[in-house]
Amino acid sequence: MPPPLPGPLAQLAPLLDDYGYLAVGVLVFLDNCVIPVPGQTILVLAAVYAGAGQLSLPVVLTVAVLAAFAGNGLAYLIGRTGGLAFVHRWGRYLRLTPERLARAEDFFRRRGTLVVTGARFVDGLRQTNGVVAGTTGMPWRRFLPANAAGAVLWAGVWAAVGYSAGSNITVLYRQAVRYQVLLLIAVLAVLALVATRAWLRHRRRRRPVYDAGSRIPHQDSGEDVPADGRH
Image (cartoon, rainbow, N blue to C red; front, side, top):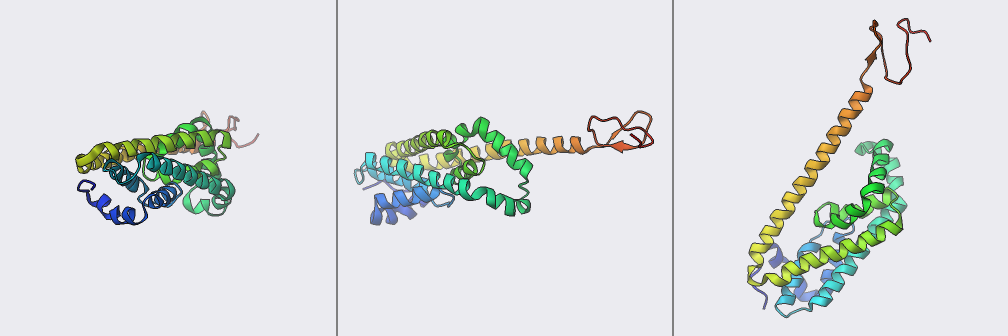
């Protein structure tokens, strides 16, 4: 018998009792492919069951890694085949301009491997990093190793937490949730800082520049404009 379970784990226990590894595979797959379902939670629960001798830990790990890899791969394919069309049609309503997409593409060229590898540990990024990687045109040869490494790390860490927790699962689960909340806050703070810097840079570029001895403003294009406006 598994130890007493905290709320979210206890709610998923009947699903795991009825469907076992299939429940782990389906929820982990969906959780890594845009749809925010409790894939991480059921992975921890399955590892707790493995620690109690009700499931096999190697099978839980194998199912979780393959499902996470496949889910994120499908998300990448969705972004690669339909992401640009979505941005071109609806991006202006989401303030996703071509300039911002170009900056995202540049960021993924420089840091995409680290993002895809570590994104699974942050709710929200776990579901969307594959789509963003595909939309920004991250090459397959870089995405696949990062996706595989991220799947192995994520499944390994959370399976180890559940398997080793035993009767301490309630305390460890609460600490893990707190850690994730703090990590999410840190990520949001960094994104807010980046967005603020980009906005300030944009304002400086749009600020009118006055010629010496003139009240006639012009954009800072590097071209001298006489006070009478003639070239």
